[in-house]
Length: 433
Ligand code: HEM
Image (cartoon, rainbow, N blue to C red):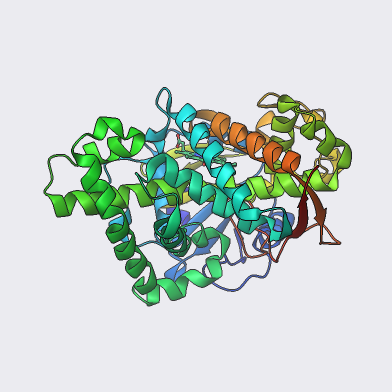
């Protein structure tokens, strides 16, 4: 089907490739170049024979119209699935009974923050008195531990079971679909062989905990809720079903948080005054720092897959968009306007969750760290509390010396999510007196 039949009037078509179709070098720069050539609204064709159509919008009204699209006709859930399934086989998504959106019932956040505290204790024990560590490896391991302590059941967050689960969850990190989109074609061509092997190992590793929790799920927090949802199934289906629920919850939620914490530490280490203020215990300031680092590190492609016809008003034109098109905007192209100084780190721009440095900005919705509208991240308060607690604990326990000379760079091919660092980001540390 041609663009003309799916989008009316027909927007300009950019020759840009998306990183999962062809090597593009820097994926964000490639979309920026298309925008410089075609303006704020344009189409990029993707997939086999260019069958997938991405309608990018960047004008202030276009972005506002994007965030107002109703889920029933322009679905974020379907768009996310279409992205993640490039890395993960269908069985991870089919028949799920607990979804990441179900993680934020009353009291859940308190449970996660207790799990974080325990995980920080273990992290500090592991780090010992002095050494050298890659910041992003450290935050990823911390995130695995906290996540598994929260929803992985008894025994999953320590010892050999933790080591094995962390390795398999790295293998299953769906974020590879947008962090290394250039590698996912090979994953599909292999029939997801390594991912399926990792899934089987996770099912085996979590099986005993599922069995143990089945007797009294109410005593096992969120993990108990996941297991209870399978109470009508036989033991084998219950083990598999609950384990795959844990996998989806974990891989869909943790990787952005781990990366954002890495950048928050990088930025604080590069701003000694701010670092001292965080060490002094100013939690509200630390939270603003975390928000600002997350904003700067955002490479998210925000996308909605059109299920039934919708109108997208870009200010200049109202487009009628038909089913099958993915409407998208790309945060790094609107978040970081150098003319407004938005490419610099300044935590004082935030008043709680609100970005206040809006002078000269045509719409407040052009800048974000956790999204706008009804899909705004439900984990924002939890994520900021977790980043604040982790940064404060690590920075008050250790003196850290950066081993990089230039500010670390993101993986260039990444399109989507919070930036991952393109190389090692090492610090040496020693315990403070
Ligand atoms: C620093 C860490 C995080 C960042 C920067 C982040 C960012 C975002 C953004 C920008 C959105 C909106 C996407 C859109 O409109 O297309 C979103 C949605 C979402 N996030 Fe997060 N997120 C983070 C951590 C988490 C965690 C830890 C969880 C779960 C434990 C989570 C669960 C979700 C869910 C379920 C949605 C979808 C909400 C909906 O569709 O209504 N996020 N996140």
